[in-house]
Length: 159
Image 1: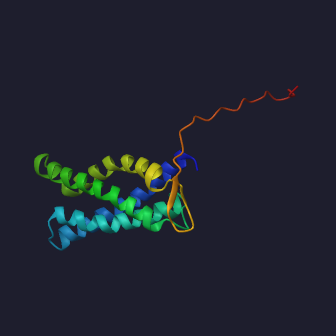
Image 2: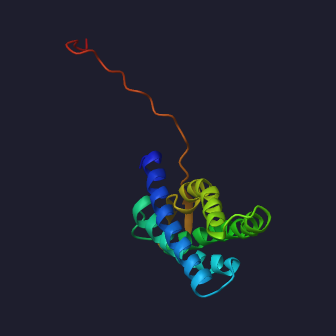
Image 3: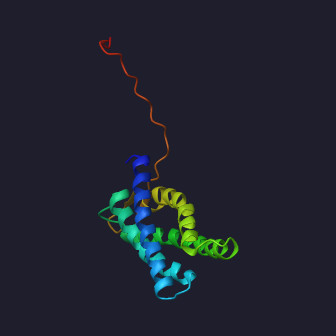
């Protein structure tokens, strides 16, 4: 699939995940009185599960297999993102005096591009397994620029 199309789909999935994340964070902090730091952790689990399933099924079209391996890889990279998020969030709120939801949006945007490349080239790359489920080869596609097709002028025939 075209990388640009996957990036667009990844951004739409990210937007849905961010909407879930921000909504849960708002409800947990403003309505239930939980500190924004802990609300961010709670919201992370729901938005990450949503994003994993949408990315697997829609963005990268991996319907049939690999839930366990891809899920472990996805959540591992997501936990790294959570660590970065939890380091930046108090900095933006306490030091730079940003509203906690705006700070969360800033950190989500910062991590979005990073997560696209990790997901494309590590989490959801094609995996070749034997009949026992052992990984034989992880096929990472090399980037090769496409050759442009030359257009012939109308009315000219190829000789």
